[in-house]
Length: 179
Image (cartoon, rainbow, N blue to C red):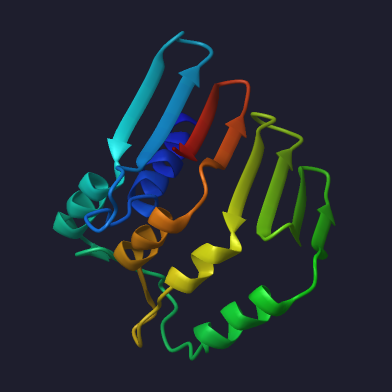
């Protein structure tokens, strides 16, 4: 679970940066990870423009200059049409899954898409992801099905302050938010 939380935190740090050069006030990405067993606490307070510069400088397999390979070989997906459908959908609950090992709920309300996952076994983690609909304007996937994380991060500059992700588990609590 620690590896998963670390990966989630790093991806969201990468996903949460925005180009703030045009902004007069610096926006911050904040991440707190509190590990229960070891008693360790990690606090990250990063200017969004710095995170965007770092993201554009990373080159590893599947992640190049701010683009993540979604690994959807031979898939033809009309991403703009999907984004428009989500944006224009009425508020409500879209998905609800009750399974022995987890409960998942996905819905839209008050200008936000919300994803809640409650794990019943294992670490018994609760994960909440809140995506303001205004962020959908910055969502960009190219012809090779690579998500432009840098473009997405630029959209964070226009987000209201508040939580993006919360994870609560027996091993650690994680909070990621914009301030």
